[in-house]
Length: 113
Ligand SMILES: Nc1ncnc2c1ncn2[C@@H]1O[C@H](COP(=O)(O)OP(=O)(O)OP(=O)(O)O)[C@@H](O)[C@H]1O
Ligand SMILES: [Mg+2]
Image (cartoon, rainbow, N blue to C red; front, side):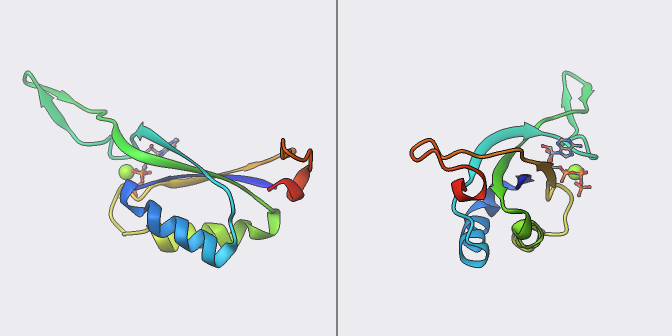
């Protein structure tokens, strides 16, 4: 299993959620409101004449744990749903997951997803 952490533009979430459900059968996700910056260091702002370089911009962090054989499909869906081609489209990080457990039934591994 893999954990996919995608930092995306807020306005892309509903399209992404629909595409993940319809095209990849993703049945669980966690979404968190986050603040961050990338290469452009957010927006430059001037506070009392001083340039502020690292303005943090609001983004959404979408977390999903998926079976290994869904990883590439899910990454493609995220790119297709969230890419505008402008700076700030976000980033995807992929992690190995050791186990998953559904608390209600004690099922483990992919059965718990
Ligand atoms: N190396 C990183 N580690 C953790 N979070 C990151 C990293 N890079 C970007 N992010 C997160 O992703 C958000 C969007 O990043 P962004 O798309 O601007 O990346 P970028 O590398 O600057 O690419 P681009 O040039 O396309 O803007 C940031 O606001 C931040 O929350
Ligand atoms: Mg950027």
